[in-house]
Image (cartoon, rainbow, N blue to C red; front, top):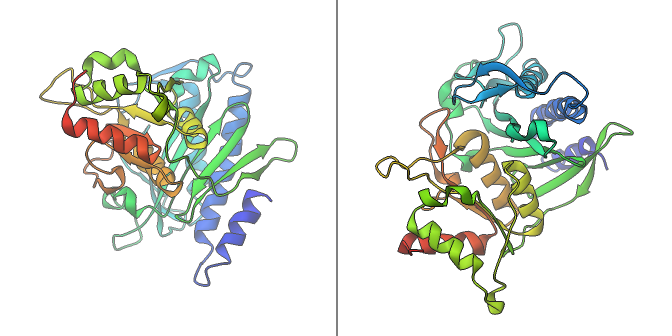
Length: 334
């Protein structure tokens, strides 16, 4: 069962479907194949290293970052499915060129998550989020991009690792597809993914522990304590590529944490981007039975006010995330 065949089969269940979302997903699938090809030959092609530029976040841009960003734009700009795009790598919204037809969907994407790991051959990925256009007129606007995660039509990611895998949801469960390079097709390999209600792993950069709130410190200590009745201690598993850590925890059970940085207590800051990372992964995990929070609020209920808004992210198995929120609410000290 190829991804295309499976998606079309799902579309036929809805008599009012126009095929536009299916066409959009097909374009995304093509782009991911092209990016996968370059990632898999990164060590022998001239795609490693830096471009010399910095993105909107002040981060140095990798050559493969730039390549993935351009390939996604070129694959998605002319299909007639989109009215506007936005990328983690671009300062402003990305309009659809005037010469191409406009559609009713909005695409937000992180072209290459985990790009700091490109040069050392660690799994990286592409994350995407799709919304319906909500403003009047043909052209998409900033307002169309600033929507709650709860209003997503579809969301997914592609992980480039030992194999290339596409995982996405249209709000009717989560499915995973593995790329068969011998035929160039994504094949349905993980149907109706359900994450465990409780995990045995946690993923966090403990090098930042000094800048966590007391509730987070207390929760991590709790995970490390030995308690056979509650399957503790948990095992620490941290890759440093959000999509890779999330993918492992989704399938095997676990919790990923990137809490607020309290270096300046008056201005606690999140690290991860709401629109390009937190919201799409939150939509996926909830469809799989998990949950995502910023510590207080469900990620899917946060109304963005900025294109590159950052938030804390705690995401994974439902019981684990709810237990974390208990510690934060009580501000339990280490």
